[in-house]
Image 1 (cartoon, helix red, strand yellow):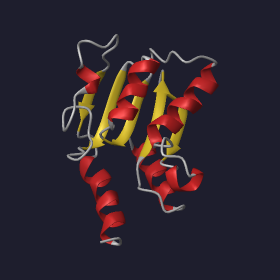
Image 2 (spheres, one colour; image 1 turned 90 degrees about the horizontal axis):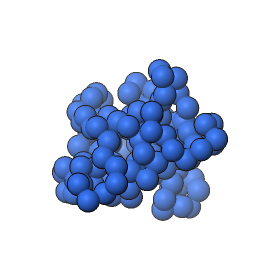
Image 3 (tube, rainbow, N blue to C red; image 1 turned 60 degrees about the vertical axis):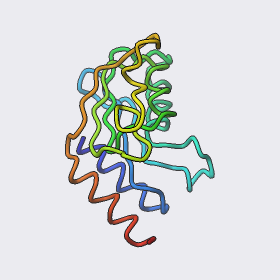
Image 4 (cartoon, helix red, strand yellow; image 1 turned 90 degrees about the vertical axis):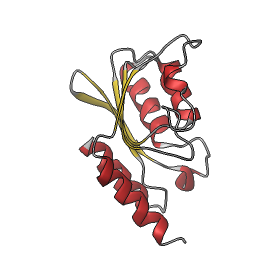
Length: 142
């Protein structure tokens, strides 16, 4: 999760919301990325999507069934859907997202029994550090 926090800090370099993500397999990072929506002008360039795409390229396939995704903010519905589609085994996130979180805060996409895959999830890892980055970012905009 500390590596994901570093990715979140990288998002600040291009004025993006500081969310970072790392995908690991067997203790090695296979994908990583910060939010890049502003940088790319792409509404789908969330940290999770950037990291999942990099992990798929690194492994040569889209099935990441033995991977763990670490992200500094509870995934939104789009990112939770990408996790399910990539068959990621486990998701660990930092700060809860009471406005768009899809691991129980607003929706529970990651535990939806009608979907074909349900990863294990754990929230709250380094939550305060993750939330502090977000609070700092948004305090300059309000």
